[in-house]
Image 1 (cartoon, rainbow, N blue to C red):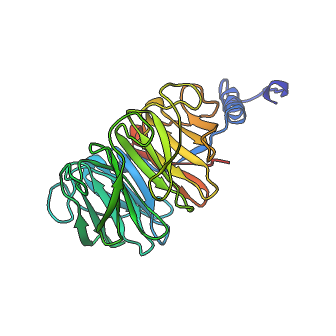
Image 2 (image 1 turned 90 degrees about the vertical axis):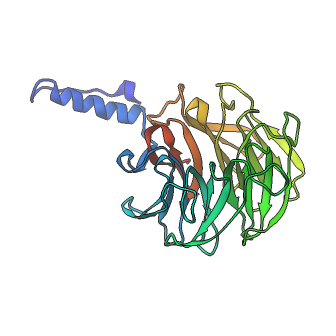
Image 3 (image 1 turned 90 degrees about the horizontal axis):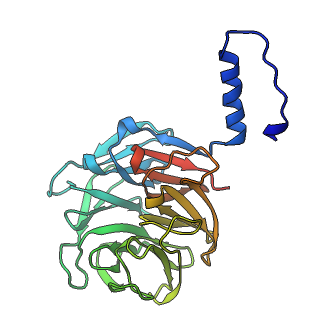
Length: 308
């Protein structure tokens, strides 16, 4: 324990060695469990990150209206897209997901559509258009792709989850606006487990709901607040193969971890954190080889957390 360590500094430049010792003590007492993968000098309010077939990071660089692709070592390789409403252009690219073929699906909040690209950033096709009818989009806020390459989209203004085939054909949707079980208050993200269970985060209701693959309600957890297990406008979530649920608790500047039944386990960041993360306005989350990737929008970074 730190309190039992006996230290002696007798020689050297005044103030230098004590400062070094203090840094070492802090590192022991408050271990750093989050590291920066991609720095703030390369991004402007990034909102999402996904992993390509060869381990590259695909990042939604939202305010720059582009998708940037980085090597596994965090080096910029190339980018695609520019600001606009045309083919291959973005206004507010907000979330992205990659299917088994390496195709990159990008949601655009402002143009109300999904565009699909090759791993090299070449446009393949697009689907979706603005509207309030079934199968129409009104601010697609989150996206995920299941093991069968079906595409799941949460529509924040239409208060529903929409499901599409791999080629962008509308299949069905579920949900409506409201606070009841099976209803949504501004749904912000969706994650599909390997068992087909669908999880949805909600900004307004400050909770997570889980559904069967057919869209039938199973359970809910979380409530508005800042205590452990509470949520404040969560904008992202991801479920692991073991059923652990990670939530970007955006308003509380932290990431929380729950078990598959919604019991709180631990958190990173936030006012009461015992570790030295700099988590600020976390948005979308991604798991990569058991490491948790966070689009840390408030610091313009992509950071990595070891959830062990």
